[in-house]
Image 1 (tube, rainbow, N blue to C red):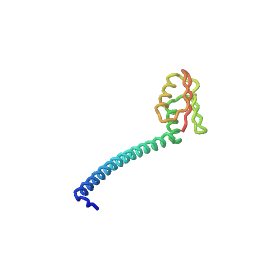
Image 2: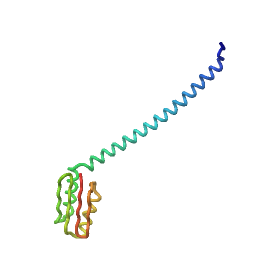
Image 3: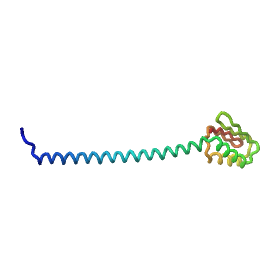
Image 4: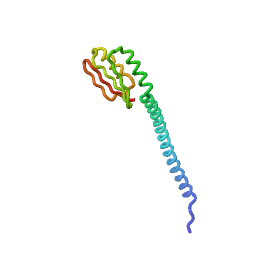
Length: 128
């Protein structure tokens, strides 16, 4: 049997150590990237949860809508609430009042399913 040269063995161990260190560094970088991605997903999920709560809150939706209706002072406005839908119908009104009312509705947090507007009438279906 041949003897293994100690210098060769030492060089092999150094090479093995260097390869191991390189792989460890690469693994640490991948772990850091995955951790950053996980934090981004957590932030997005919290934002989604907050938005879902604010947009799907029936009580808050009705409260905001009632405030807008009260402030608009439109006399022939009809509101109907059923089956997770709110329908608002304004059959005959001035263009200025309809425009002001529709702007308030569109600038609020409502899930608008249907929106029909003419010069003298307005029909809106909203969900909650």
